[in-house]
Every structure is written in C-alpha cells, then in structure tokens.
Length: 239
Image (cartoon, rainbow, N blue to C red; front, side, top):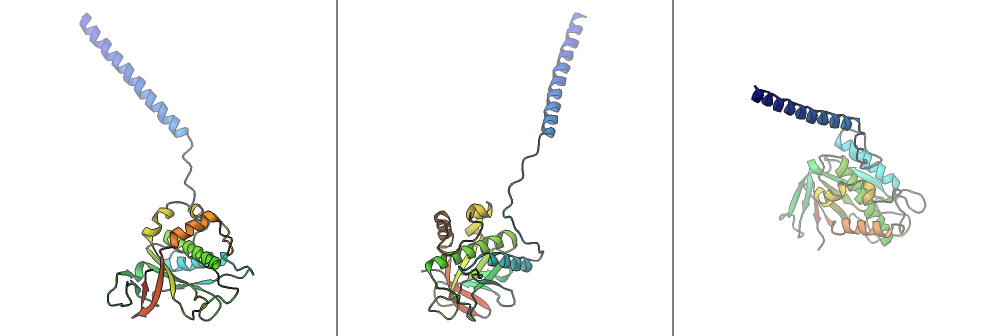
C-alpha cells in the first residue's frame, strides 16, 4: 500500500510540474500578444507610381523624376521620354562595331528605354553651357530614374537611358545601361540612403558623398549608341 501511495505521489508531483510549465508557457504567450508589433520597415520612397500597367508606371516615374531636376533658371533640365515597344524590339550589346557578333541581347519584354531630351529638336540642352557638373547631375537623374523603374516597374530588369547630345554633337551617341544585378544591393535600402539629397541638386551642388555614389554606380555603365538595326538598339560598352 505504501508503495502504491508513493507512485501516486510521484504522478501528482509530475502533474504539478507539467501544470506549472504550461502555465508559464501560456503566460509568456499572453505577454507576447500584449506587446506592440514590430514597426514596419521604412518605405523605399515617399512617392511611388499608382498605375497598374508597367508602361503607365514608367510614364509616371519619368514625369516624377524629370520635373524634380532644374536648370539654374528654374526651367526643367530635360524632359524624360519613354520609348514603347513599338519603337524598338530589344537591345544588343556589341564589343565591336559589328552587329553580327553581339555580346549580349536583351528582350523588349523586360527592358525599359528612356530618353533625356533637352528643348532642341535633336534633344540637345539649349539653355546654359554644357559642363562636367551638369553632366554629373544628368547621371544622377539617370540613376534615380533607373532605381525607381527597377523598384516599381516589374518585370523590368534592364534600363537603357539616352543622354542629350553634347556640345559638338547633333545626334544621340551616349547612354547609361543598368541591369537589376548592378543595383540589387542599393534597391534593398530606401532611396534616400543612396541619394540623400531629397531635392535634386543644381549643377555643382552635388554633395561629395553623393557625388562618390553617383560616380561609383554610373562610372562603368556608360555605353556608346551605335544605331538601330531592324528595330534593335545597338550599344557598345566603354573601352
């Protein structure tokens, strides 16, 4: 009989311990429920396009980015024109001036093409003087345009941006060409971490840290525009 009582005592003790563990677990769960949920991550940008279609989103992005960049006079630096798929069928990269031996090809389905166009018929910027500082601001604008596009205009994976002709040019010759992999790490952070100046700077007013970022992210993305062959845009990487 004493042995039976001992066994029952051990079972009673076990039940008490189990009950205490369950009680602690429930209490901890209730405490977790009462805690405030973690704060959501900051938005990638304070503005984003609202359209559903990719092409419409690209137009919204072009308008938003373009109107932020100004000349010293207050006039818009350039208009940003979107090129739809009826104007081109893809992009080809060649290492030599021979389109028969492409180094890489990119589909119209996942490639966005923009044109930074000044007021002249050739898209040259007619106001003011072309300077290195103004070119830097144009590259900053192109970088911001590419980042917005890759962030919000899925399924776009590549962004080709034409620059206005230079002082001694009468046609388009220069582009920047970005691929999603090029900007993947920057897209993981809010836009203002990459480009802290919320108000796009005038030429000569890009801060040193931001200037370094622009140079780092655009320096090897300059491609020469060779022309269009059978509705395919042909570009050549820097030598």
